Image (cartoon, rainbow, N blue to C red; front, side, top):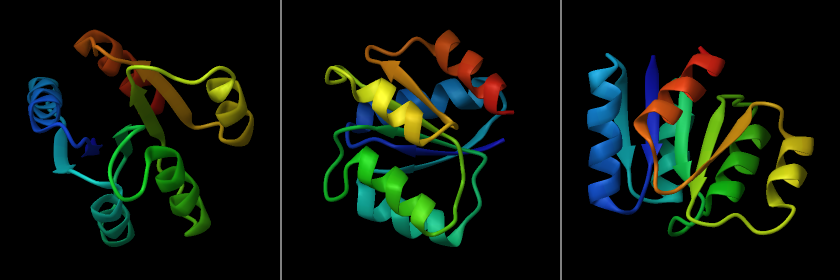
Length: 117
């Protein structure tokens, strides 16, 4: 499985990468939404793990833009806080999106990856 990690917190991004490597998953890290969109257009990923509040293009906009480009890679959106109704609204628009509240548990990411595998 090839995973794109979109996280502006370098420590968090590196922890995610290590967790994925421990599960024998390949991963690429980018630190903002613009970089993520550029990489998504060029490379193929099996999953995008993306912080909701990233610089330049936020996680929700990244999801919308990728779908507009006919790129249907599943997303896991992460945040310390999801606004009321956000998860329901997003799930009604996109069936291949999961949500993960920070702090992140490695076991939860692994479980979610298995759903998309």
